[in-house]
Amino acid sequence: MKKIITVLLSIMFLISCTESHFKHNPNSKNSVTEIQKIINRVPRENIWYLKAGGKGDGKSAENPIGSTKILANKSQIGDTIVLISSEDIFDGGIKLKEGQRLFGLSKSGNKPIITNSNITQNLGCGILLSNNNHVKNIKIEKTVASGIFGLNSTKIRIDNVEVNNANQSHLTIDIKQAEYSTIPSPLPHGGMVFINSKDNSQIEINGSDVFDASGIGVVSLASNNAQVSLNLNHVKVKGGSKIGFFDVGIAAMVQDESAKLNLNVSDSEVQGRLSRSGRNVMIVASSGANANAQIKGFLSGSTGQDGIVAAVMQSPSVIDVTIKDSLIEGAGQMNIEGTLVNLDPIDSQDPDIGRVSFNIENSIVRNAGAVSGFEEVAANIWLGASQFISDKPPTKGQYSLVLNNSRIEGAGRSGLEFGDLDFFNKGFTDESDYKAVLRNNAILNNGTELMINAPNVNIDASNNCWNHADGLIENEIKTHYPDKRTQVNTSEPILCDDVSVKDYKYD
Image 1 (cartoon, rainbow, N blue to C red):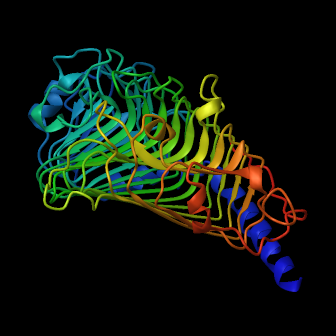
Image 2 (cartoon, rainbow, N blue to C red):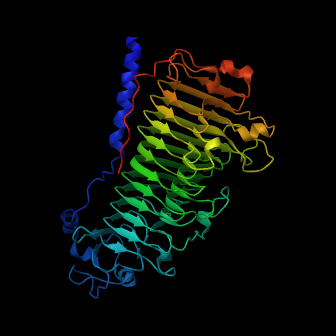
Image 3 (cartoon, helix red, strand yellow):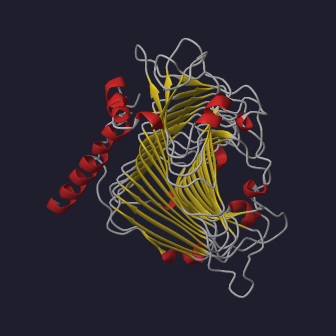
């Protein structure tokens, strides 16, 4: 009994501690004083001042440049550009050269605003990146195309930037580097877009917001030999509208055998992609690529389809996802999904080594099926094959789930589900290997606590609390392979009566 009480107290403490992660608490609001100190360290000849309507030579705050074209002609590699706040909006976008920094000087607490209403100027984007750029304390509004766009840009840092209503014209990216052959529509412009097909890149986004971007809020696409790291800290992505296949908050996409993409998200929030294709976080790997995601202190809120989805489009690609101290709730269909898509593998000699894995700790995953029409197919955590090509059997591969000290509750159909029921109903057999280890979790009040739709499923679910003190009862697990029930171990249940989790609060 003492051991049980200790475990329960640990669950209560660890989960309730996640509450603080969902407060949007950027590093600082980048005051005029802070930015002025940076400017004071820069030689005068390397500083250019900008302001909407400016008529000066740009060499002082009193004589700013007002034209993006004049800035392009005068500024040099490595210069610092200072955009001064005004009642007017700086139109036409800004194209940064290598090593340049763009800082905004606020006035009365208001950041300077950039827009771009002209598709022929800077691609219709608010800021075009080069290499080794730093953007700070800027607001970008109602751009024709992306708010921020980087093509093969390396070493990018974005601090305290707001992007609102980007991609007003619902444009897609008409360049070869943005083609992603395993996605059924071109990549759209969006809030912040980074495409790398050549050099390695590290992208840092801190204390920033992306609201109501059409297509995608934030996306990084890596291909060929590119090794890319996309890091988001204290970032909010909310709302937006669908373009083709894409209605996504954060997207990390990687293709080709030598490419790799690392996604790191901390103390951040995504919600409000509300079309039937809406996804808060989408991680996609194709053509033998490798993707890794570390997600901590994260809120995934309301969305039309999936909260966090990891999709291997072609074996032998691999996606590994770690989720800690997070709240994943209110997805229309799946709160967390891992899938192998039935496209032809790129390696016919070894086609079955594609993998999707999730390691989830100290988190709450709840209320999948919150959108009308998905209630009967909604799972809090679902691993299984997806049918991209009709009448083709499911891809064989590997699925892994490690779930510790977490709460899984309130899904319309299933708390945890393994295998695709539609494939089973069509007479296909999913030969993939599924392995799950569940420890010290509360798995409660789902339509079905466990659902098994594939034969090769092995679930070690000892030491969890279910709806009843004596553990998981017969009608709370559904399997289409009764002879395989011995592969599910739900022994040594822990008591649930004293398990309480504080409600999450976020602004």
